[in-house]
Length: 218
Image (cartoon, rainbow, N blue to C red; front, side, top):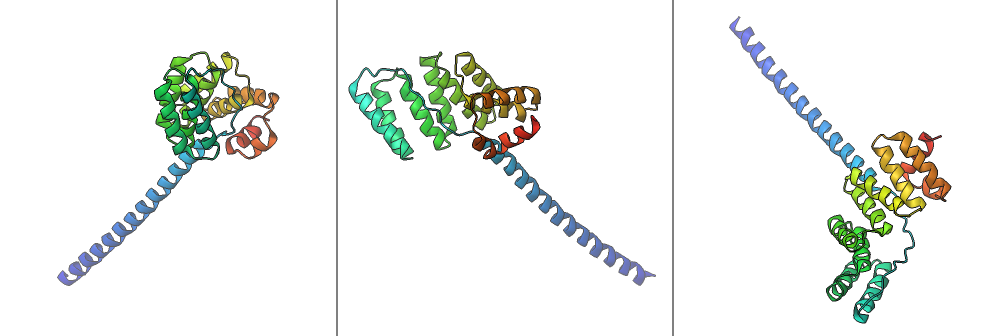
């Protein structure tokens, strides 16, 4: 009997060990799957409309050197040399601190580098200098969306529209934020306006969110 009990004890220990190892393996696999799904969630949300809108900001430079630095910085940004462009914009800002265009342009460079905190700070400053320019709110809405501040993104997109920014990009981005926040009716209404304003079919087919909206809003 003692030998049988001892054998049963050894078997139970072995079984517990196997169960523990199996549990650990399954738990580890579950955690890996969870992390992977979370990463997909974040990356999907960050991929939205990135097409630029031609902007002619109505600001006159007071100091020639600041304007020269701005022109050179803009040329560098078009070559994707964002760090060099930012350096020149910063020099221009030191010279002319009350020009909203400089803060708007440098914010775009920061956004291209995914330095979203500095992009927001620059846009906040541009808006403090000129609170009636819809382009500033449109771009800040996009940055808010990227940092998961959806309510702020919606507010800024709507404000841009109120100020007269009647472009398909704003409506398309707004429709995506609405849909992401389970406001399908508003999303479809806004998406319809975006298409009426000229949202290209190739943009829709090339964007995951807009493709989903296209199907959901039929």
